Length: 426
Image 1: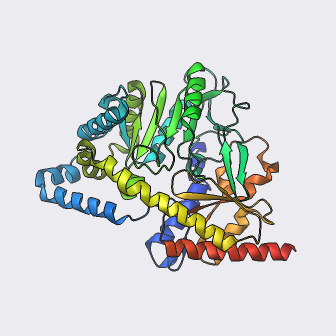
Image 2: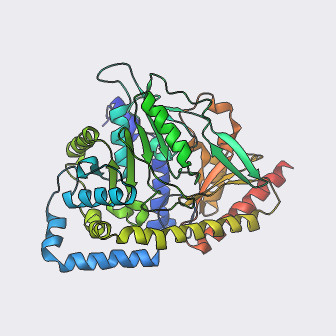
């Protein structure tokens, strides 16, 4: 049959960077198709032994508690999420930061990807009242998963970063506040913190400045906290998260080590929480109960944040330092490269300023040699005049969440391929 697809259907089911990424991730991690593939792509969290042990313990406790297990598996929760879990999240954040919030400020969604689809759909596009609005992304590159979530063309309006070279092989992106303008066509400002793909962490001052600019224009600031504080806490710089009315913050259980539970949390003012609850009810009836049941007592008893501080943060900080050392050893001085300052998350962002080919082609070459990376082109979208900006074709994202053997082997193959390319160019 020749199916006639709607415009919305085309937007959601057409070619997509995030779908390609997840297909590669699934193949590499789940069976024979990925056998021998070195997975330096995707954002799958590492398997931290101490954390895995906690999840297994919690599952044993749940199975031993028959009423709890039956409720978890056999009952729907309301579309906003488990009342006990929402209360535990609110109490945790209130105790940690003093924010004036309660369970009415918390909505659960089926993962952070779903949360941002709901938020972008609510805040951008043809408005019920007033002109069409867009999502402003003030710091490119930004998360690949946002790029195809707009139901209308030109949903995103993005800004190039200010690039600071820190040393011969190190650099950092900054928001170019001189170029930042929140016009009447902006429905929300959005950043990830830490930034996926670069590992950049916006400073408290930058976040405060963004929040004030957004408040002055009467639009919300959305902060994607998938890797941030207080959980999972994969942040290597001292920061103090901020939230106030008019801001929206999301959290994820995935990066704690529970991606299979597809559970995220949205912190927002009550009217927006009610709308997200309604969208969950319409799209999926209710959320997954399992992640909420596993984590709720750990939040309520204060154990979760201790695990984040004592296990998760040191693990990823150590993995970051190890991966940077491997890059330095394998790349040497054979070709120009820079690594973005690693301040959080699970990734290194590599810039090859004299790369003879686009990183999309480098991706294909490395995939043929059993190494998966993510080409940088996917992370630059919503930009005016991006086609003539060479930088967007010179960067790649690699993950350091896999085993050291996988990371070292993959980086070694990448180094060899880069040497070949530069030698061919002469």
